[in-house]
Length: 236
Image 1 (cartoon, rainbow, N blue to C red):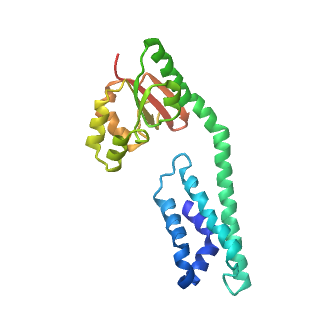
Image 2 (cartoon, one colour):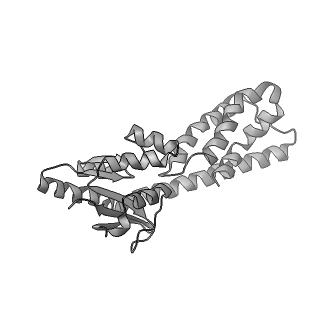
Image 3 (spheres, helix red, strand yellow):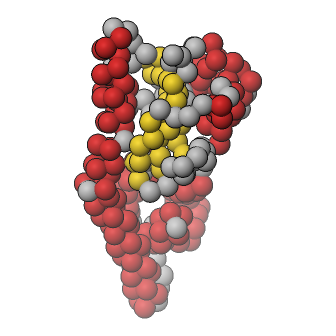
């Protein structure tokens, strides 16, 4: 749907560039590349796709300002193309509005019930024991901030070793490094709240590496339906 929407929006530019390939194709080639790249090679997590897609509208502004809008000689075809583009923009705006509503309402409540709660939960225990815990987790944001603990982000966002080993899919080095950190807590994301059902493939590897099937989570918190935080304590 990302690809179809963006192609519909930029269809006047795409056809214009192809029709004038001798003079315009090189200039618009980056647009073609990024439409494909951002549609199929960027994980759409936390609305990341639109963070990259939005700047592409600079091409649209340039096209409207400096190029002829008469892509076809036939007036009806030009109108049809314009309608297609407007329909794509309308669909894109609906998509953005749905995300806005989600982040204002559902996401805000989910943050309070999930990451914020867990962060404060760990902070309280950490303060009582007068030490900072080492926590393995797939979110280096709210949990790290509110817990004030040492957090190893499993995506590698705050750790070069995890980032590079994950990128290379060197899972042996990745898991060996995590094991050496000797974490106090591990937080994994599950699709089910009754038993751990991994939402992320690499978290299943972490689950097995630390033999978490032998432990019960000390805390299970729902983020959104089908998205549950499982907090495991490794040291007593």
